[in-house]
Length: 192
Image 1 (cartoon, one colour):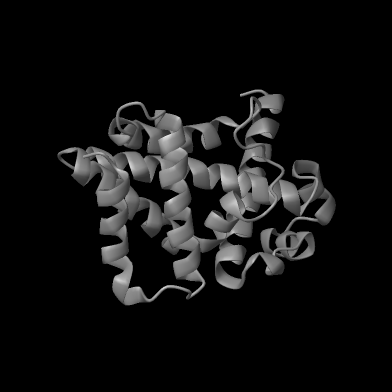
Image 2 (spheres, rainbow, N blue to C red):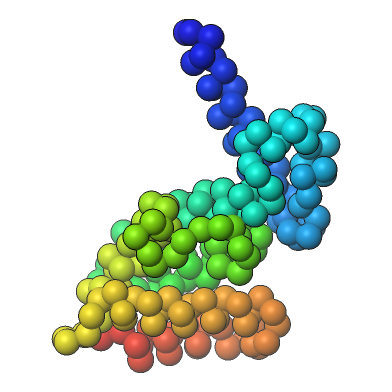
């Protein structure tokens, strides 16, 4: 292994450490607790080293979001692939989405609430974000209904899931109705 290859491997390792530490800190204490100073202390590198990887917190949030998008896509695909029939796939996908949001609130915020400097729904949208949407579209596109554009239906269904995730987390919806809400969403929006 050349010196250059070793340096690149070490750089990649440091970058993964920064992202993992930011994510861990955000999940434990919220994104306000994630500062470059605290990250530098936790990873035991100087702030200039941290800035050699990321220009600031915004880019770190973006990196966490991209990692989270890849994880979400994998979770959605896994859930849908384990279900039999269109209704079961849609229900499994919806459950997986809401479970991901609940288990990973800081990642979910990085993806959908905070400014991570990422472009959504544009030509330069990063691949992990496109793939997360594709994971939704793969299942939801087949239940959009005749004459309904699959991507538009997927956006609408995703918006409803996001609303449920956000309102539930904020304590704006009663926990007792969670399953009934989800069943209603699946039954009324999807052409099954």
